[in-house]
Amino acid sequence: MATPPKPEADPWSVIEMINQSPPVDCSKPYDATTLAGKTILITGGASGFGAAFARHWASHGAHLIIGDVNDAAGESLVAELRASAKPDQVLIYQHCDVTSWPDQLALFKSARRASPTGSIDGVVAGAGIVERGDPLNASATNAVFDLPHNLDSDSAPPPPLGVLAVNLTGVMYTAHLALYHLPRNKRGADRHLLLISSIAGLFPLPGQTEYTASKHAVMGLFRALRGTAWTKGVRVNVLAPYFVDTPLLPKAGLALLAGAAKAELEDVVDAATRTMADAEVRGRALVVGPKMRVLDGGEGRIRTVEGDMKRDGERKQAVWDVYGDDYERVEAFMWRYLSVLNVMTGVQGWIGFVKDIFGICFGARREQ
View 1 (cartoon, rainbow, N blue to C red):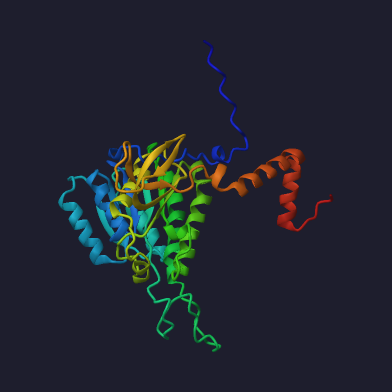
View 2: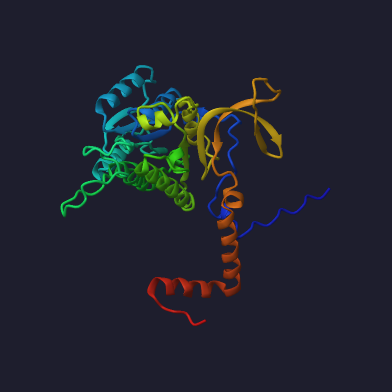
C-alpha cells in the first residue's frame, strides 16, 4: 500500500513560524535524569520557588549557580545542598540584586567560569517580590500603588515602583543575559530559559496592581521571546503558579484564599522540572493550581469530577497548559486578524508590504 504524501507545511502557520511544541500533556511522565550534568543559573534562588527548584534539581545531579540578595539564606541553602552532593557537583551562591545590571553581569560570568563545561544550559528568572502595603489602609506610611496621597506638593514623590523594578526590569536583565550566554553553549545540548509569572499574569489580583502589571508583562515577554529565541537555539517557557503558601504570599492574598484550596509547592517544582528536563517543551505556559479530580472526556477533553464517589479512571492534576492551542482557539481574534493580514499580504505582495512598513517608520504616505 502506497504511503500517502506528507501534507505541505502551511507557510502562514504561526505555530510553525515560532517552532512551538504541541500543548503539554501534563498527565504524562517525563525523564528528570536529563538534568544530570546541566549547569543551571537561578535568580531569586535562596528561598521560595527558586530554593525548591535548587533542592530538587541538585538531587538529580545538576550544577547550580544561585543568585539572591538574602545572603544568609543563600549560603545556608548551598551548605545544605553540598552535604548530599556528588564530589564534582558545582553548587555556588553569589549575591545578586537583580535590579543591578553589574550584579547580573557578574552572576552570569561566574556561572560560565564555574560550569564544568564552561557553559550554561538553563536559566530561571525566579526573583520576584509583592507589594507589602495594605490596600485597604490609606495611612501616610502605606506604600501601595493604588492609594496615591500627598500629591498636591510640587515635590510629591513618584509612585512606588520597586516591585516593577524586581519583577520586570530584573527579569528583562536576566532574559537579555540568557539570550547571550545560552547560545554560546556549543555542546549541542539543550538551552532553556524559564520565566516565572503568576496567576496574576493571567487575571488581575486586587490590591496588587503593581505586581499584577509586572506579571502580565512577564507573560508578554514570554510570548514575544518564544517567537524569536528558537532561532538562537534557545527554548523559552513560563510558569504561572496559583497562590502557594510561601513567604511571597501577602496577608491580602491569604485573606482572599480563606477557606479555599491553594497550589502545592511540590506541583510548582514538578512543572518547572518538566520544562527544564524535557527539551521537547517549547514556547509553552504552564499554570499550577490546586489539585483537581479529572477524567478524560474523549477527543482530548478533560472533565472535572464532583462529589465524594471515586470514578474509574479519575486522576488528580495540578499542572495545565495555559493556552493549549492558543493560536487556533483562545486567541480567536488574533488568529482571524492574522488570517486577514496574510490574505492582504498575499494580494499586494511583499513589495507593497515593505512600502507600507517604510511609510509607517518614516512618515511616507503610499498612494492608494
